[in-house]
Length: 171
Image 1 (tube, rainbow, N blue to C red):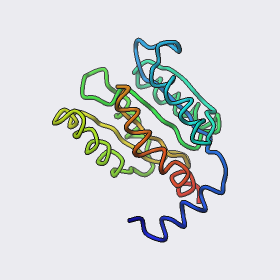
Image 2: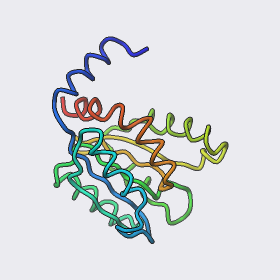
Image 3: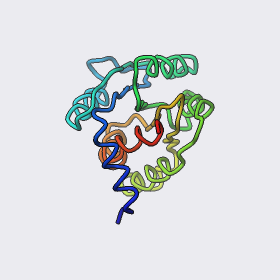
Image 4: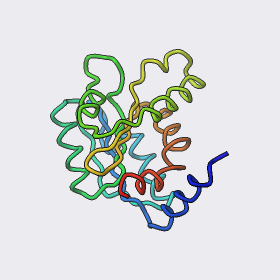
């Protein structure tokens, strides 16, 4: 059961209006037409009453990850959703770049995400380096690039708390 202070914070946050959201797909192969995650997230964000103010598909190259993070901030995104590049393969660098950039790490996001993933994929969930943190007064969330992972993260973790997250980091 949520605490009364959590409920109070959520109520205040909900009164602040739509949250500007940035979406970044990290993939060496996806295009705007084949970006299943972008095609899912953009309408899901809007359906939740928020607005997409930034969208990009980039390669999993450290310089591109770092640059797009700043571009999303400059575009006004208060919450930035990365998908892709969180595994342990040599090409997976999204986590490494973001982890260096976070002002404050939110370890609970990754812990909860892996718990939920375990229910879906079993022990393979340990391979995920899903993470979240703050950067320049924004909330940055990074998930694996599988469509199921993006959907689970959005529906079970991000959507229910997005206004609260944006309010907390800005107060």
